[in-house]
Length: 354
Ligand SMILES: Nc1nc2c(ncn2[C@@H]2O[C@H](COP(=O)(O)OP(=O)(O)O)[C@@H](O)[C@H]2O)c(=O)[nH]1
Ligand SMILES: [Mg+2]
Image (tube, rainbow, N blue to C red; front, side, top):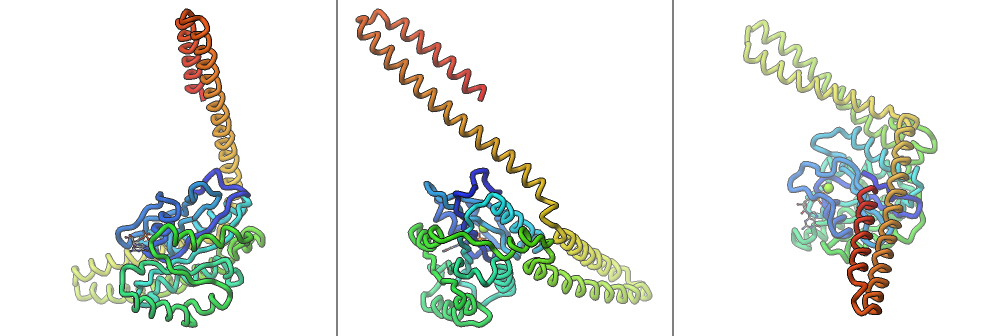
């Protein structure tokens, strides 16, 4: 969820990376709580969520990883894109991206590679100066081993080397607020930029599946769909054989597997439909939401003014009443108390009507 308070004065820093690497933990250190931490490898962050660093105009955006146990990559890309579109329409200052990686990872697993690919496609290699590649969980293993892993990341052509060459920085997070703030600080000062995905979708008007990030997901879906269809065809042959052999148990097993595969193919088709989305499809909904947000902001502002007025009214009555009591040698006390009680009732009434 975004916040109605995100406008052109607010600075946005997105936090991306595989599920479980410590994105929410990092955000919690920086913002002093709020983001939900995962205890196992199921994702806690289903939607993008904005967390404000206390007493600043800087927000960290927690994003779901492209490896969610329950949602397809298409849905995740759609969610990230929806969130970026919203910040773009609100004219927020998107200044940086923090890509998180756990140093305890023995090597780049498939999901880590996929997340790195998606990060590059969403942000764009040309914007690496706005990116920090942050390693976490240093306290969880031997320092020398962690250092070896960091060197591999730094020097691997398929890992971080090309990104560092393009201006990304590499940082270590060591589980303190100070360390989180040191990582964030450079992005609070730099200019805003337009992510590749935002540019393609919002300025060039491409549907999601025509953006580079969308193509990446579509290609994966096509490959998986093809593999699943081949498996379904094989199962069909096996079923015919089992039918001939009157092997009821085998038929049941095959039918179960076919059903599972078919539901995966259906989910993929659904994902492809989702990626056909264009800005025009969601613009109206977003504009309606901004209008509601404007009303919320105005109501909050009005409530704040009313609160100030109530404080001023109380202070005046207490001051004047007190002075009257002293000046009258106590005679004015009942009248002053009555006046104060009336004022309290009136203020309470007004507060209830807000
Ligand atoms: N020691 C240590 N544990 C961490 C760190 N970051 C995350 N964890 C643990 O890793 C698990 C997943 O963290 P979480 O922040 O939910 O990951 P996310 O899915 O990327 O948001 C949790 O059990 C955290 O306590 C870190 O920097 N140091
Ligand atoms: Mg999380």
